[in-house]
Length: 280
Image 1 (cartoon, rainbow, N blue to C red):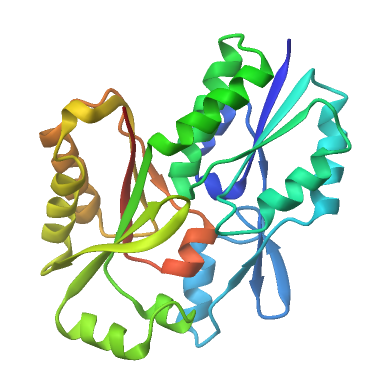
Image 2: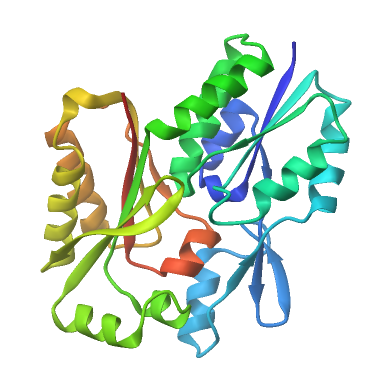
């Protein structure tokens, strides 16, 4: 049986991972002024930052509509025995709802809500690909994924809040107070939604190290196959601090370092780094 795994571009997997598992990526739309651009194809995070630095408004994102999904599923459903598409959390976007409606036209297309974003979403996509490669039936893969999503631990630590402020996700008063106190908030994904976790204070690299140690405080409760270090553009020293802290906490088999795509970057801006892993 041939099974095609596809995902929204919000999964933030590397080009090498996408190629290795032959994953189909559906790019989200990034709105820059009057232009609608395809995530990762027509626009990169650095393009967004340059636009904002030049005085432009914060870019916004748009979900794929039902027709977009219908066209893509139509092209794939006839070429494969089954198609399994994994969406960004339904709490963050209407992508999942639109994909489900589109999939109703195709008996061999299955849609899964990752309940996550960025490489938290990516973990679910890779698990789907690995199960398909192992020969599991599509119905069983979907069942496994729906249980697996609750095990994904995704969070980020922010070094700046200006993008959040400009995008209306935090007040100017909160942003000013955080900047004056050198606070670095941790944003967690819980139940498919984002919430503010612990706030760190001080130099960013030191905050990154403490954040990693806090998240990985109980390694016996973790799956050690893979942990992502995903960032939206940070100094090399911050990536090194995160990698050093991960290795000090647990013996993960694979520690891929990936760059967040336009969706996360347009909301959080540069200076955001997270570790994303699986709990048992």
